[in-house]
Length: 181
Image (cartoon, rainbow, N blue to C red; front, side, top):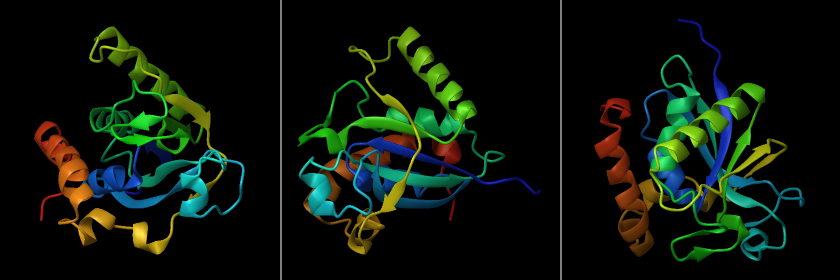
């Protein structure tokens, strides 16, 4: 099977959470934590955390659409974060924690609009979805210590109390997409 891999960039709060989940999705070939949606080239974590750069913590996902369709990636994405809180995820507050889909092309934009419309019609969330749909411009990988953070630090407090429950929710709801060892 010779399929073309695709990429998308998603922001939904702390990138450690998103990376930890998407690393376990069958059909995802690579997940990189980083920054997207801002104006400053090659920002540092400290600069992004200040809120001054306009970047969101995000993950760049490379995937095989023959194994996992983009629509299914989006359903996982909307399951593991709260898309109804503007510039915040739980205790993480600021524009760097906003919910955003940085679509690579018009097809991804259309699929994202459809998924948001479906979720809205299903009334899955009490409040309206505020996830931004933004054309992809640039992605900057985060510092090395942020990469595979959950895998390398599962006992760290934030990982145990914030990341692990999101991973568990994914495993429960999307077991059919879980990579089997």
